[in-house]
Length: 293
Image: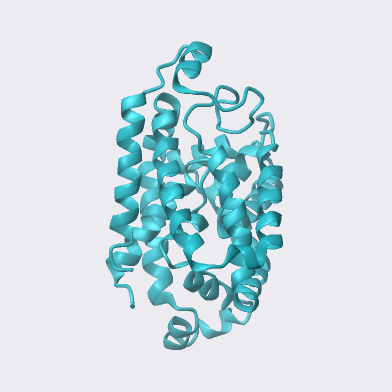
């Protein structure tokens, strides 16, 4: 069923919100809202010859599926620039609640995705995804330092590559590189110079990475989905609401905690009732976005 403008816009908005939180990927949201195949194929249609087709607007529009990409990009733009400050505030003051919302979304989504592929037939791909997911859990955020233009450019390229893959977020990669405060600050205060360099890096990453993903998904869809399921299973660990180490949401030196342990070790409220409310919101939001599956 072809999605309308507003339905694509809402999916883009959800992807934008996800990318503001180190722990869940915009690609994950695309995957669980059933637009991932179209997203990858649309992005893979771009190459250096696309500049020539700009002189023929109708051809450019059809060739690159702008009918889909335009509302999707607009939704992401609206989410990122309207909610950056709010998400920063929530991550500082109500971090367990924010993570619980995305944890609920991921659990429900995975329960749906595993029904679409016979994982036993592609056990090796599943285990490969799990292994890579485990490896990503041990990434430790770099210390904040002055970010150079080169760092911002390649940070954008790596972040957009992570954004394309379900299971690991671009924000998480920026966090590991020590660029998260720089980029989120540039978005919140609108710093054109930083955002331009970062955007160019993102374009570079799309051109050279998305084609590989598109090839894998086209030629080996079941193996690819099995790999993604394994990776997403490990991303659930990163979204556990109560963690005591590394305030930016990564690193598991103290392990995953229960609500009482979290309060005892951090001196902060576990926000148990708020966590439950946000989990229901996460389940409801997934139903809302997928209401025309």
